[in-house]
Image (cartoon, rainbow, N blue to C red; front, side, top):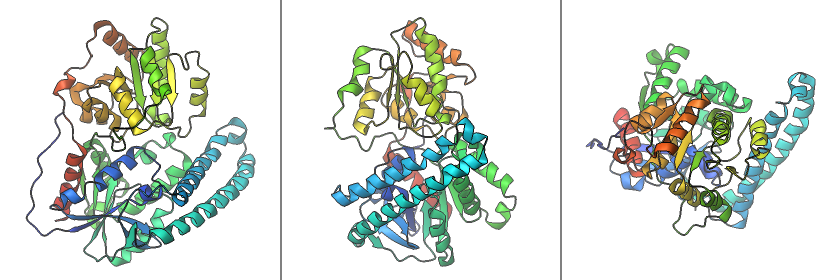
Length: 454
């Protein structure tokens, strides 16, 4: 599809928007989809001063701080804090993984027996993280962040993942100040597809959404598909929401540049090797978790490998949750490190290399909010095959080749056709597609918010 590139000029006085980036500020080492959106929108605020006075902020100790530098200096104290935050996050995934196993599923007592020492360990790590954070904060306040005075006319835009367990208390403390709130919604997966999420995320997101549904004056999603879901879900779940709050609903689309990809970056030899050994590398990018549907893609390629050993399947994404069985299946597969590869720590430079070298991107996701790898790949001329779900049609239109998620053989047939004919099996040619840059995305985002608030 052709994305909008026209943005209405406003003549009214500029309003003050406070864009929350708390989680990215505290977790600068994380580089998934939401973090990429936050960084790219924040980095383009200065060039959009004619639209709004927009400031990046964080919430801390029931106060609002303006962020002067989103990514910290890589000194020893900040590296230690980032490392301990990462360790605690990884540790937090162990309990959900442990209780997935059969003995714990059938015995509440066994789950409780494991939970108690797990919780004690988490508390210990929390104390270390808090101590490291306090040490760094003393050096950062006044330099990296500055306390901000806010008024009742200001609007807080929840751009970051504000459903984190410790964020709601901070948000609740702002309500008496009369600050308006606008919520950015990336998806509703914890509500609509809880089977794909761990229990902690489901609980915290549900609690947050119930709060924000009665508090926010507006909602802006990252796709029209999600905007419609929000409006329908919210109005059915909270019947009086229109009577009491009368919120507005809108959306914007995401850009396609890889912001952490320096031209001088290094690509490791092991990342290059699959592309040297095969001309037909099919690339999948995304966190390894159930809804991304890696197992479906592996099923399809097992069918293909029965007759064609030239094809290569390349998984790129960090290890997520509820994926132990899949990781074991990949690492014990007879094609692992031959025609099946998995990399969990690619840099943006290496990701750029993969986009440039692959034959095709494949996204078999069961549900998505946008599908950022689609626009990143297509903007680079890399064709994409994707699951037949509404949001992918919105983003890619007739330029993508779609397959039925009930039939891995349908995907296998698309790959065979592409390999046999050399013509990509989409209705339209990729050369005619165009998407937004992050400059366009940031401008669209700010303009649509201001138009509703004005």
